[in-house]
Length: 501
View 1 (tube, one colour):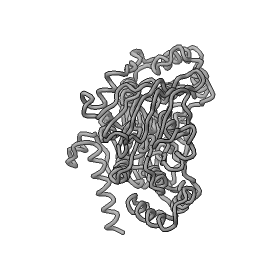
View 2 (spheres, helix red, strand yellow):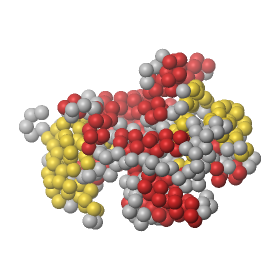
View 3 (tube, one colour):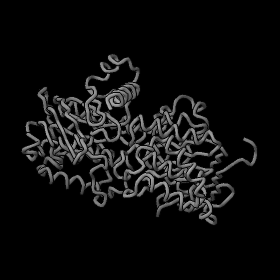
View 4 (cartoon, one colour):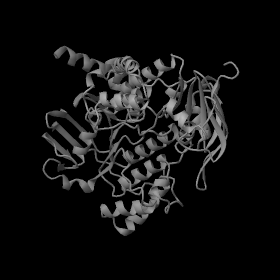
């Protein structure tokens, strides 16, 4: 880039929250028209850096200029001309797709003629045109992400800042989102994106790797001495799984989950459409599918949270349609929101869940030591859960779900948004749990993780498309990776639906 082409200049940036230093002396220059990635483990300071660049957070020390404007003195001018999409994207759930776009265009003072032209292009490219009148809260997670991105593009900002834009979306929606991002970048726009997907970071022109609030390295991904996964594993210590599981090992291979013709309707909408499968003790069973395919609804039925509309469901010998309470002491559940009380300490959360599951005092004391050791929280028992990183909360939530030694543990998107090292460590724990004889029922959008499962089931629009071992499914359908298999089967199902309409 030519001299003077910098859009963002960060000099000596320090940001503290109380006594905690989230950023510690950051120096960065990001050039006009650059696609710049920010990666790092959970708690490294990625979101703090992006919010500082967007003039949302003021520096404790140092300075940031965006397009020559200072983020403290000229904050209003900066925020009015950039686009920022946070992890918790700010859409109005009770407004329709059309109304959200109109609202964001109005607050950005987009002229009517320009809005009509941009609206048509964004709707066509995002695939949201058929859903103009649908309320945002009724959209799938993937469609909500696309709408949030479109709302940030409607005023055509020269700088677009994206914080984990594909967090929690399925592989097909992830591809669609990146098509929109890359198309916008090709028009000469500057884009800064934080991501936990290393394949996304590899597509950036330059990447900054953050660790403990500092820039560990910054440059082209191809110059970093291997893939970005290698950088993670070379610089971050992986927490070891506790070698001693405090559970009696169960070796039987009995069927613990049996589903036959399961149907769940919400009014006229069929969320789960006649699916059947079974899972044995000690199996890791992956439940895959796009956003809105019925995965979470099925898990909630299996946990006794929702009643089925039709079919039969048996979990650990209990009929979940008739007496779900019979199974509640034999199942564990970790939801997408971690299932923890953030205002309680680590120890208080463990004690609470131990009490809910009526774990005896002596047993709870032994298992508490295991949970804190497994989660890497020894010595932090009195730390508030809200002050833990996402990866530590994730492991604590798993430990709390296992305290009562359930026969079946349900994990709904347990690794969403965590870095590769934390993800690998978590899967080490899952394998140890399965080896102890517990059945693990897990959903994930990281399709590389599906390779760790004994078997997987793929859902789409509430219907079961396929179920078998990952290698068997790839061989049957001529796919090299699980992501290729996912895209192929979903595409075929959509084509079949089009022909029958």
